[in-house]
Image 1 (cartoon, rainbow, N blue to C red):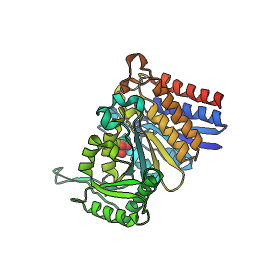
Image 2 (tube, rainbow, N blue to C red):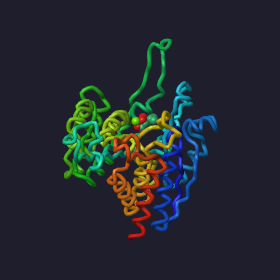
Image 3 (cartoon, protein in one colour):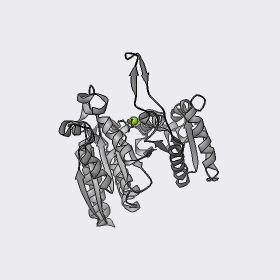
Image 4 (cartoon, rainbow, N blue to C red):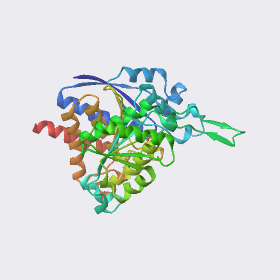
Length: 361
Ligand code: IPM
Ligand code: MG
């Protein structure tokens, strides 16, 4: 198959991990006789510097014309004092909104070989395997424009959801649960927020279409607690934008490192944006120490969700598993000091596994 992938390296460690993921995809293309055409475009701080805005029109256009998009990360201290429309993060938010990527899937799975690097006790975290389905284009992030009134003494952020926006993400939550263990935790703050009350109504309506799925309504505060006291309790969590942002960072450390986690941002057709959950980590940029595995596993999600290439996606995940089982890790992963490798070496280890898999197949 021939596919067009837009590569958005972004800022900080973004370029290094995006490059790593692209080289892994190239190996998969060789192994399975596909052609992936990569088109590199600017986003975030890098785009502010080169084009004067965080999401240049030609970047958005290329993404619209692509089969899939792979992003590194955006943000950095040099743009922190910029006005809101010239912040790197704005580029990412505009891209999500501009492409209508409303469903953000963030799987969190513990790797048996890394259990000891979790901040939680091994017996608590062992067997954790959950999926956060986060609404990505509504809520507080995209309400009527935020403003300061009363000489800056009053601030307004608006939490706005349309019924159809809630319906479609709740639908994704149910569909995801059907593909897994058929348990869905719908997370809200219905004891306070009107938006959460509508959210609950919609979940109850939709649950009639999915009689096999066991649904539970949970409040976001107690969910945050349960995630660290009993993470294996969860299968699929579906929640609104800001709650999903916070809970997914919390869940991400269960595995021992944020650096390992992939994500997919999807809409109703095949186009998707894939990015590691970690940020741009400017403090470690350019040192060849960033963990490329979050980006590499995002590339696996890209193959699975945008290209329908199950076997190809599995091959990346198996390669990563093998590398981890051999004891290797990057500096964020608490492996034996002797087994700590840099970004480039970690990437080669994964590619070597893929090459071996090809030879033995
Ligand atoms: C994420 C990030 C973004 C978000 C930032 C960079 C705008 O934290 O993808 O979780 O809040 O959505
Ligand atoms: Mg976040």
